[in-house]
Image (cartoon, rainbow, N blue to C red; front, side, top):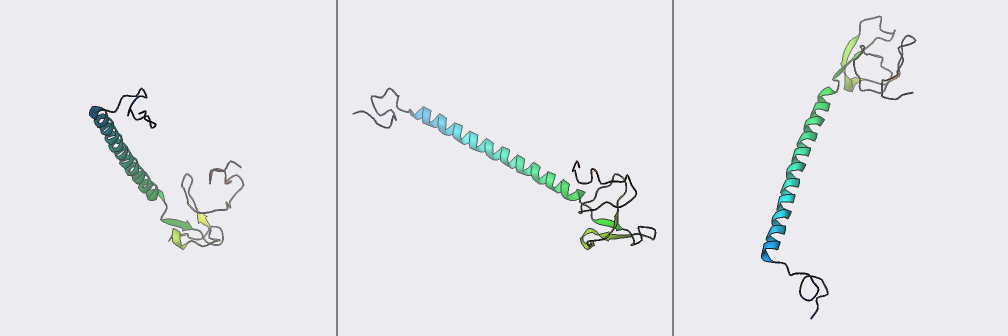
Amino acid sequence: MRSVRGDGGGGDGVAPPTEATVIEKTALFITVVRFGKRVGAHVIGRAAVEVAALGRLTLQTATVLSANGGTAPSESVAIALLSPGDTVGVKPGAGFSVDRKVVGPPGCGGGGGDGDSG
C-alpha cells in the first residue's frame, strides 16, 4: 500500500526516519531553542542597561529665569514643577527635555534644539 503523506511508509522513494535521524533532529531543535533563549536574554539585558542609561540623562531640575528676562536672580526648580510660560535658562551645550519656544537675541535661534532641520 502506498503512503499518501510521504512519510516513508512505503513506495514513495523516501526512506523511513531512523531513530538516529529523529534524535539528531531533536537535538538540533533543542540546541536552536536554547541558543535563541540565550540570545534573547542577552538582548533584553542590554536593552535594560540602555534604558537605564537614558533615564540617568533626564534632567531633574531647571533654572527658571525671572519674568523680566533674567536680570534678577534665577531659581532652580524641579522639572515636574515647570508650568507653561516659564522661561528656562539653558547654558550653551546643555540639554533640556521640555517643549520650548526660543526667546533671546537674534542668532540664538532654535535650530538643533529638537532635531528638526527647519
